[in-house]
Length: 544
Image (cartoon, rainbow, N blue to C red):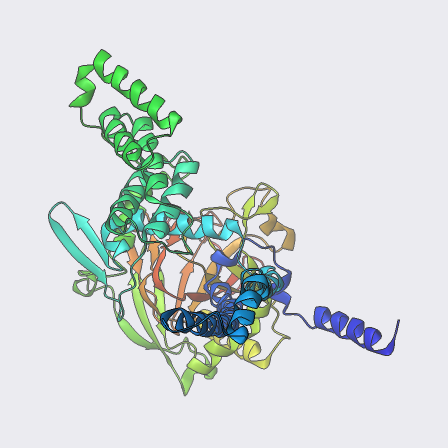
């Protein structure tokens, strides 16, 4: 191996070792954290550079072809061009024997496209996987469900809740960004492939509508066509029990592709079914949203999320108040924290401006390289699940002095011991597209939970810090408490997970509502029972 080759190999090894730790995460997890989605902008910028170079090369090639065309055309336009001129006769023979062959068989076009393809292949390993497309599509469906969003509005870039004749704007973007027919088709196809026709039909209907409006236009980037959308929508309607719609859509398909024998057979099948059961032609099919067995509190959860954290009666309750909190701690005497009592049972308080902008940014920066797909306890295992879409990282207080300061501040406010093993390391979470965490308890509800491996008891309290703001959605909903708390940048939410008896407080069932628009970051400090015996004394009374 020569010196140049050895240097190239060394640089390759160094590049691998110096890579961002987040890059070791499995492909297919890009959608689960917005910071990962933002990172995907970099490879697209590289692709834009490649495409620009390709376009410049093609423009130069076409300019040269145009020059050749006009040169030859000028000879044909001159009626006085005599082939008797030996020079002209020679160039005619040369053009027909050599020049045209060189033009037609020129490798320049293939070299340009080959350079584009080679560049794409070098970038391809950094691109989101198909699983990310599926995850992003499921996120749109989740937002559609939880916030009762209108699919037609979403396709136009508008976030509107439609209930009957009432239309409510949940978020007004500064710039409208509409979806194409192919975009809507891909969302509908993800639902279609899962057998979820409740979601597939409205997205495929919108795809059909948009494809109809642009029929005849060719877009290089599109994977689907009007025929694809009609085909999938027809079968989705058939599976949902609406044979008449399936028949009409299949007939429309045959107008564009009359030689398709499969769809022609489907038309005969649908016509036969309608002839045998004429009532199906007028029966109205009611689509049922897919059931979620593990989410028994879905209606309450979604209703709380739809309030977007707004509590109109909150300030009418005298027992809920605001104050400056020192907790009798010398640490807080000179700089008390603004405390807002949100709820009494369960007891939930919000500490405003608990961290500064600089501290929040620092914590996010420390965590970002180490973010991995968030997991939940399943028996004795930790598994990624669809009902929790985020990435998280654990930070020891030895990583940076800002974490030591944070622990000291939490301890001063709560009066609890927050040092390991009596508390867990700080968990920093970044939510993904439509990122959420469906109703759950922070404390362990099973003796086999991995939480007990710390040998410091159950999680007695949760201290959750909002490290960012969001533009819409993302509230923290307490299901049995029947209230939700909006994301308040730099504020911290605190609640007790256990009664003083050590029993879990069922009223702390809570959820992270899907983020509608924005980049949600939180930091969790979970404090355990052991070490708090004299800081929060036990009680045998269940109500304590």
